[in-house]
Image 1: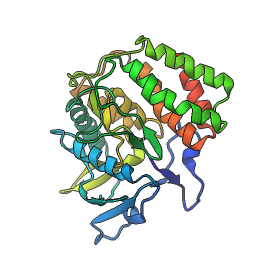
Image 2: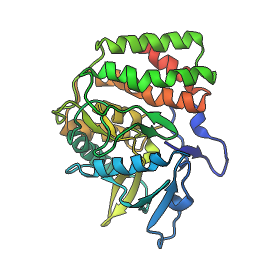
Image 3: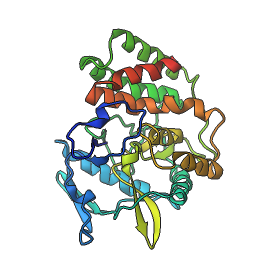
Image 4: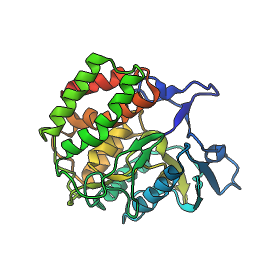
Length: 304
C-alpha cells in the first residue's frame, strides 16, 4: 500500500475518491526512487520499513509464498533482506497490453488455486501479525471459523473502524452502518463459494492488489505482469479481483474475464465486488481519513 503522486504534485491522491482510476505514479512509503528509475543499469532496488522492521520481512515472506504457486503470477524476486530493509529485483516497466491483462487473469487464478491452510493464515513460515502498508493486518496462526463472512467482519473490517471514527472519517451514524454490515457478514449470510479452481479452505491471496502493485514489463519480448508489495494471507479469491477495481487497473474487464474462463467465479460475484472492496476502503479511511470514510459507509450500507 503506497501513496500516489500526480505530475510532480505532492498531493496524496489516495486521499481522494477511491472509485476513480488516476493516471499517477505510485510512490511507496520508505522506498527509494529505484522502481521508477529508467536507467537500464539498475537491476534492483532497496526499500525500508514504515518504522516497523517486521513489515519488510512480512513482505518478503509473502513474495516467496506467492512465488511458489505453480503457473501463478510472477512476483518481484527477493534478492536479500536485513533488519528494516528489503532488496528485490527491478521490473523494467512498459505499458500494459490486453494480452498481458488476460494472462494476468489466468495466472492469478492459478495463484489463488495454490491455496492456503485456512482463512487468515499467514504466508508459510511467518508468525505474528501482518502488515498492509502502515496498517497492521490480523492473521490467524491456527484455523478458526470456516465462514468467510465471520472472518472478514472480525479481522478485515472491525479492526479498522475505531481508527476511522477517531480521525473523523466515519461519524456515529456511519459507525452504526458499518457495524450492521459486520453483523450480517458474521452470520455467514453473505458467504459464497470460492472460484472453481480453489478446492481448499482458502485461496492464496496477494491481499493488497490495487493497480499500483501490478507492474507491467517485458520479459523475453513479451509484456507480462509482476506483483509487488503483498499483504499475503489466506482468504477469498474474489477479494483480490475486487481490489483491482478500487483505483482501477488496465484492461480490468479482460483480467476478470480471463480469470473466469480458467476458474469460473460463483454466481452473483458482481454483486459482491463492493463487499470485497470494503477492507481496502476502511483501511484507507483509518489511515488517511477524508472521503474514504463516506465511501466506506456507502459501501457497507449496500450490505447492511
